[in-house]
Length: 438
Image (cartoon, rainbow, N blue to C red):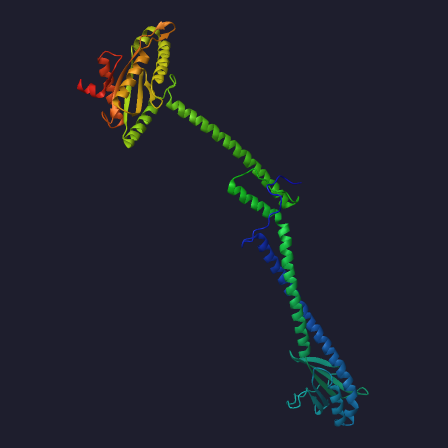
């Protein structure tokens, strides 16, 4: 069974120092090499002892035959014949020395591979020994002692010393050949292990690569391929299930964040909008006034602020009720919004008070003309439920930077100008400079 996957091929493991394939290959080769070295050592040691035993057995057999040949010569005291016999026996390879001794441990005949060398010590008398014996004089030689008998009676002894150098050379040659074969086998095993482990570890490498890609691009829709239903296959299935859960959780979280963002924008709009007239409220007005003042200061532009107060609005509420008053506020807001420029910002400050920000004015006359348009728009006949509402608009006008240099001072200046217009008879406007002169 296979799941969906983003790739159709098995990815090759990365050739990095921390590669799992490389690390396992090294460990396997280390174990294999140690095992083969131990096996080779054990086999070489066993071969050495077996070969040495075979050579000792062969030397003992040759010594027995030689002892039978020299027994008559020893009885008849024919040393010359004994020496000839030893010379014939010396054709045996690896022979170092041969001694024929009497029962009194007297040297009867002798042969030595190197005539100039000193005679080896005579073997000690073995009067009580009745059987041949083999001993090692060193790691390079062995000594065979054989009693010489004639008709069952011991008449002397024969000592044969043989070299083990040929055996050593043969074992060294075999060891060299075996070492070469072992090295070749390890090299072949390394290539084979790397290929086998690359194939065996392909699901884990695939899973690791997928985890890295998911971690990098946060795309939890990816899935790994289940190659076999073994432990790694079950791990891959659980990993795919985890990715699916994360994908669902991420989608839910994204949807929740979008909903919260929409709700946040709605809350922000509600926080900055007047619920009755849908105009920006005082909070929005304060931020916009500050922003436009900064922009006008940087651009060296003329701007103005209108403080608008409705006339006779209290009469409307008292005589016609609050519902009529709300209807009047909504209608007046629409009329004023239609009389101003697109770039102007009209806000309801509260009750029957409004403010109008006039940015980027060409001159002061343009603001005065806009004030007249707003007054005319509000003063036009306004009917609610068939009854005429006696409302009008009084405006205070203040300029930046002529009348004030900060938001609070500009608002106060326009407010004072509005009260000057009220005193002048309502349904009119006054500038902050004119209000100061009055």
